[in-house]
Image 1 (tube, rainbow, N blue to C red):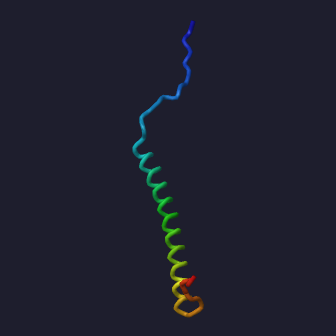
Image 2 (tube, rainbow, N blue to C red; image 1 turned 90 degrees about the vertical axis):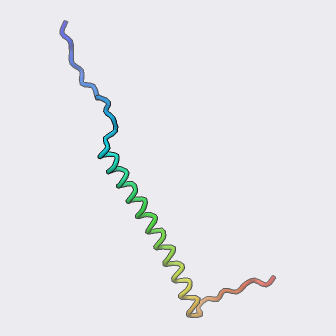
Image 3 (cartoon, rainbow, N blue to C red; image 1 turned 180 degrees about the vertical axis):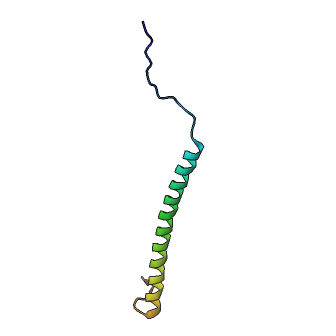
Length: 64
């Protein structure tokens, strides 16, 4: 009886280069999302203070 060779996936340890690339990609993506959020909040704040300075809006405390 002949021994048959079966192709098995060999388990290897983690690839350091692959892990670095995946981590770098995820980090840059998350950082980009955070910066876009920060820029949006900055734009909103700047627009609020510009409108306040022009007198288009006013901040009045409620006296109730």
